[in-house]
Image (tube, rainbow, N blue to C red; front, side, top):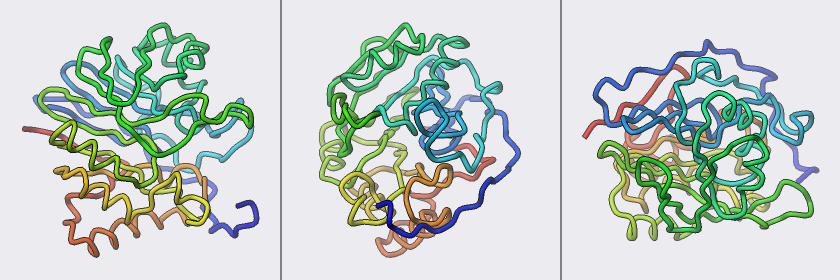
Length: 286
């Protein structure tokens, strides 16, 4: 992988941050902050997924890929966060510096797969609930179920797969939202649909997928993400995990172009699987 040629990304993309939109009677308002971080506003509470506000995705924020696109919502502008969904322990999904800041400011509940609670508690988070696949959380004020994913966990060379990983199904205000975390394409998407029922919105990874000989076992490409969308039989999907940190070799815009091509080839209407613009939120109404 180290010998693979990388498409060069811009060193920095500056776009004006925004403030979250009011709920105003919607079942949920979903705002893409960047990478795998979404702000999900509901009447029952506000959720933050895989939060990372650091400038690097790596140990002590000193090494690792540098942030190219800044968060669409500044940390200071976040609404009160009641729940954090933490899909696994990789540095670009489990950022300890951000978790410490959330602990000091909001004292949220963190829902995460088995084996991650000690790491999360080390940041000052007091309320942590670990789940196995298909288990439903008890602490949050809304139904949240951990779903399977095909990925791995590790923060050092010595702790590979010592903790579990997964996605989440959230039911809030009558809307059902699936956050996939990070995963390769496997039959688990069909299993999620069969076991947990209909889905209004899926948040699916579309980036960090090249070269395929190396990444196919852990990351979906856009064509596989569209197939996951079809397997889930979901009303609408939003792409994530692209355009923020250069983790792999493809160019910064290739996931979005690939998503458009994949939707066309699989006869999926562009409006049913798209990405959110930097200044855009999605309002769910039923």
